[in-house]
Amino acid sequence: MRLVALLFLLPWALAQTLLPAGTFGLSFREEAGAWIYEGEGVRLVYVPGVGWVEPPDAQLPAPEGERVPLEALRSLGYFRTPEAGVRFAPQGRGLRLVLDLTQPYPGLSQDSQGQERLTLLLPYLALGTLQVAWPKGLEARVRLLPTGTELSLFAKGKLLRYRLFPLENPPRLVLDLYPLEPEVAEPLAPGIRYREVWAFSPEPLRLYLVEAERGRLIPVGGPGARALPKDLAKDALAVLNGGYFDPKSGTPIGLWVQDGVTVSYPYGRVALLWDSFSFFMGFPKFEAVVQGPQGERVRVGINASRARYTAYTAPGPVGREGEEVALVRGDKVQNILPAPQELPPGTWALAFPKGAPPFPLRPGDSLSLFGRLDPPFRYALEGGPLLVREGQYAFDPSQENFRDPRPLQAVAPQAAVAWTREGRLWLLVSEPTTPGVLARALLSLGAWNALRMDGGGSAQLWVKGRLRSPYQGSPRPVVSALALYAP
Image (cartoon, rainbow, N blue to C red; front, top):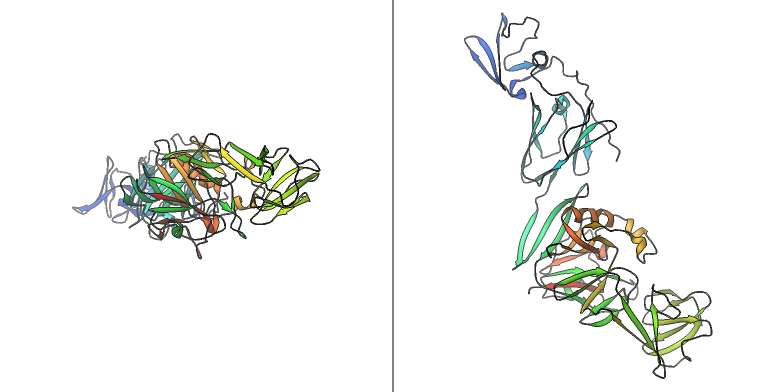
C-alpha cells in the first residue's frame, strides 16, 4: 500500500525550538530568582540576566521560563537514543506513523488487545511526532525522553489497537494506530454468547458472531421457497444464512443433507458435515445411483464429479458435445436431447454418450436418482470456498467448482462457519471484505477450520430474531440457513 506522506521532518527541524519542560520529562519551578529544571537524573539551573549556572555554559541557548530550548538538551547529551525522521498519513480507520531510521530496528513486532488508554515508548528521538494530526476523538501527549519518544494516547469510549513492526530496505519502524468501537459480548444461553470482535488482517476487521461451546445446529429451509433466515427458524437462538442457490428458481446448489435425507446433491465445493456437535469440513464422498425403468441400477457421477454417466441437478448448461441428456421431472423422462442443454428449474438430467444410455430409455420412462454420503452424516450443507484448514490459510477457489472468480474478489459481507481447536463453534458475518482477507482475520483469532457460506446480500446473522450483522439495504430472502438451538 502506498503511503502518502503528509509531513516529513528532518532531524534538525526543531533545533533551538523552545518547548515546555514537561515535553522532556522535566519539572519546572522558580526558586530564589532562578529557573530550575529537574528530572530523568538531571538538574538544570538558569538565572535570568546571568545565564546558566548548572551547567555553567555560556554557549547554551537560554530558556524562557517553563520553556526549554531543545538544542540545550541536545548539547548536554540528554537524549540517549538516535533520531528518526517522521512521516504520517491516514490509514483506513486510523493513522500510520513511519519512523525513517539509519539502522534496522532491533526489536520485534508487537500489537495490543485494545483499551481506552495506551502508552508507547518508541526508542528514538522522533521530533516529528509533535506535529502529527491525530485522528478525531483521540487525545495524544508526546514526551521526548532520554530513552525515546513516549506517546500517551486516550480515546474515550473507544478501543485503541495498534501494530508496531519494522521494515527493511530502507530501515523503517511503522506504527498503525486505530481508535475502534468497543467489542461486545452478550450471553444467550449456557455456553452460547453473541460477540462483536476485531481481528487484524492486517487492517482491523469487525466480525459479528455467535460462539457456542455446546448446542444443536440444524439446517433449515426448503428447495424453491425463500424467506429471511429468522423466519426459517423462529425459535432458534441464532440463524446464519446457508449455502448457494439459483436466484430465479430457488433451487439449492450444493450438498444438503437434512436428518439423513439428501435434499440437494454435491456441486464440487467444500461442505460442512456434522453429527450432534462434532463438525467436519471437506469434499463430500458421495455415491449417486440412477434406477431405470426395469429397476436396473447404475452408479453415476454427480454435477462437477463427471463420469461416463453423469447426473445434473443444478440449473445451468448440462452435458457436453458428443453426449445426450435425458431431462427428468420427478421420476419421468420428459425428453432426450443432444447435449449441451439448459436444465429447466424443477428437473434433473442424466448425461450419457450419444446413442449409448446405461439402459434403454425413451420419454415417459421412469428414472430415479438416489444418493448417499460415505461415511453417512446426519447433516451436511455445502458452501465454499474453504478458508482455514487445521490452523492454516486454505483459501484457494481454483480447487473448488467456482467458474466465475469475480464474486469472490468483490468486497462484500462474508458469512462463514468456523471453530477453534478447543471445539468452540462460530457462526459469523464480517463487515464488507473479501474471503481471502476473512481467512486471515479468522486465523488471527485462533480459528482451526473455517468455511465460507453464501455472501453479499445473503450474508446475515440473526440473534433471537434480530439482525446483528449490518447490511446496507433490505436483507435478502434465502433458501437455506443454519439454526442454532440451546442444548
